[in-house]
Length: 496
Image (tube, rainbow, N blue to C red; front, side, top):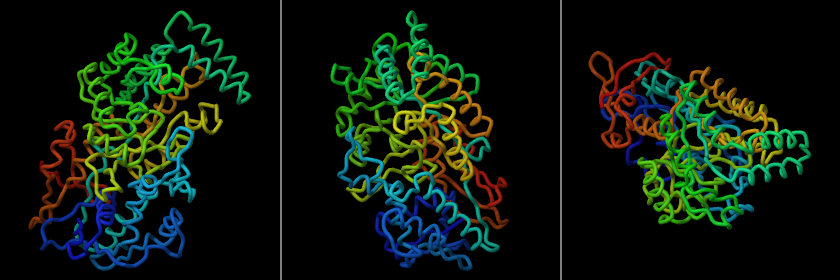
């Protein structure tokens, strides 16, 4: 257990947020009993950087210098500069303040400090949290140390499969656009194979066929995924922009939604371009999706990952969403918020934590094929598994996106087999796999664990804060929250 700094530390809100995020990601348990002999976390004015620099270079210097943490007997001293930098990265502060825009009116990836420092392939904040956990273990001596178990079911890491339902009808138009894309890249053979597959599918519905194949695979592997669904009215303009392409009330859309829900999967909103700065549009689309499915969408991901960082999330909160999974790079794969985890949202304009979870997107199929010119689906999956291995090594969370329209008839020969390899490999690696809403609920409950006291026999009495109860998706899941020692040996149960 640890003791957090008291009010005398006079931490700024961004520093407090950074400290709590590190403690949570490290799975450390704050102690409430002021008399208990546990490791104290002290904040110092010492600069965590080994040398000068700016932006992401600070992070590189901090990592090289052991994050500036100092270990004493029963104490770990953490520099203020590290806490502020954690908030800068995991809170997307630079992107919230950026005025830069790409051709899709998004903040470009280059505005991210990790990209600028070529660190986007490293979950840098999660690495800092691991360093804090190790420092606490070294400082403890004979003092008891407890961690919260990382995931339910005795699993040591987690993975989430997500799908954006971008296409339901009018598939020949999307197939033709894909053929043009392939010919421009010089992929004539791949384009020819896609054209032949489309010709064979003319009498059927390759979109629904691809969706059903995917649902069957996930049923076989016992994967429950999250599907983000468009919920607006398409127009000629939205079709040309690649935005809204179908009505959610259409026959095929209803069929898709019915089969997705029947498989036990989660449905969230795929926010259209119009939602980017509009609470009212978010509410309208969320209500429309709820009316069709009978289920309240808890989460949202923006179409094209198009958002105004901070502003869009504020509108999401006001519209009633509990989590957002938009923070991924459109043109590369990696850790946009520097975490292989779920983190609270940070509102930089207001200088405070927002009441919503951020579940960053780490890997997307089209990031490689559309933006990087990599057309081999096997290479996409190799990239996904490399990032997943990093997440597994940190006992963290990997989040991937596979579009269900990536089928041979729509211009992606070889893609379904590649996805099957990805899914089977993740399952084989024994990840805890669940929809994003369930993962967010688990993390909210885990974050709320506190140690009340150390009993005379040396055991630890711990409980969850009552505020977490509203986020629990099921009693059976949260009942699995336990404490363990630093070696991973199960210890005490946590009282609800």
